[in-house]
Amino acid sequence: MQPPPAPRPIEQRQPALDLLDDQRIERLGSDGFFVVDGFLGTEAALAIRGEALALSHAGTLRPAGLGRGDALRLERAARGDEIAWLDPQESPPALRAFLGRLESVRDEVNRGAYLGLRRYEVQVARYDRGAGYVRHRDAFPGGPNRTLTAIYYLNDGWIPAHGGALRLFPTGREPLELAPLLDRLVVFRSADLEHEVCPSWAERLAVTAWFYGREDLPR
Ligand code: OGA
Ligand code: MN
Image 1 (spheres, helix red, strand yellow):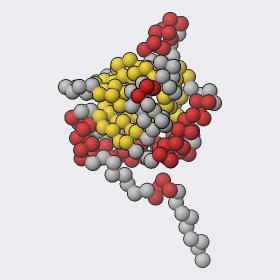
Image 2: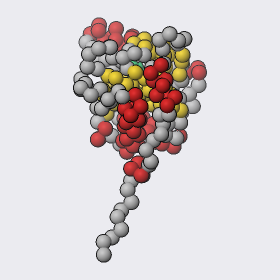
Image 3: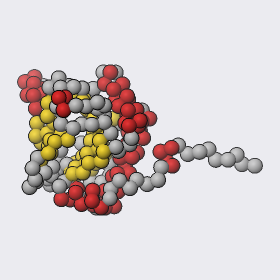
Image 4: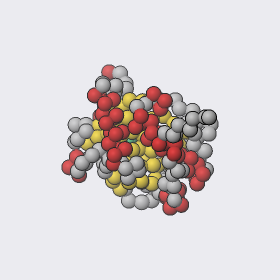
């Protein structure tokens, strides 16, 4: 007799996500972004936070936008975070499960918005002590480039005095600010939506993924 099959890991047993109702897809088109609060639940978010913190304590984070000499100083003024690129295959378990869910989001965006998203790159970023990131886009319109940005925040007990809001500048609409709250996912069109990170006065952690279109390869 054959032994009964081993139960599949939890992540594989989850039904397909239905995160992207028509409204969210519509917002991606009209406003260029959408927000999902409570993306994975507090427990999962805290596990991911723990892994991201471990990476930062292990000294794997490096100043973003590394330059040389004066260029480095100038870039630090424009962008003060420290980052580590993640290899999805080599990531610790909670981060890997998170990336699996993000791939489901990508698949739903592809079904609903025909963006043809495929490969992605992912980083952990940490801001602290007044660090911010000046207004920018994640991609320039036109050439092979980032198509969709997804940022997942990992900050438990965040209060307004900590600053660190993500300020969005949707075309034809008032700017708005989103606090980097634990378990909040913000998704936007990389080439269209200008945004900035306001100076952060507490440790501010996030995992960010950039999805590329059909023909576009990461750097
Ligand atoms: C970026 C960025 C925003 C944030 O890394 O390009 O804009 O809220 N991050 O962390
Ligand atoms: Mn950005």
